[in-house]
Length: 100
Image 1 (cartoon, helix red, strand yellow):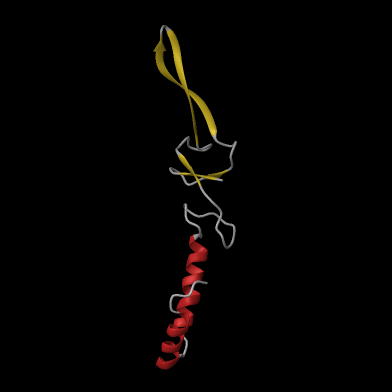
Image 2 (tube, rainbow, N blue to C red):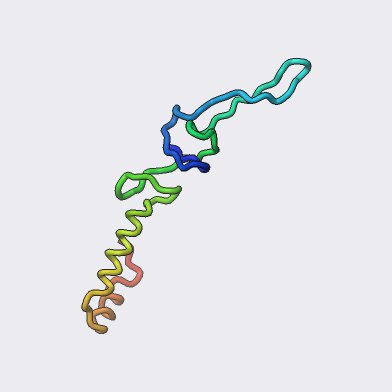
C-alpha cells in the first residue's frame, strides 16, 4: 500500500500513474525519463505498512493513530483507578522493567 505525500491518497502497487517526461536530446535523439506518481495528483509517494493491531494504515509507524490513542486512553483510565499509594508501589515493584 502506498500513500501520496501531496494529497494523502492511498493506493495499491500497480495503480500508480506512469508517464514519460522529456529530458532533452542525447546524440540527436530525444531522451525521455519514465516517472511515476500518485494516480490522482502525480505527487511523490511512500510505502506504508498496516497497523499491527487493527490492520488499518499508519504514517510509517507500527501502530495507527486511532489504536495509539485508544491504548493511551485505556492506560490513562487504569492510572485513574482507585489504587492506593501502597498498591501503586506494589505494582511498580512487580512490573518494573517487565516486557509485555
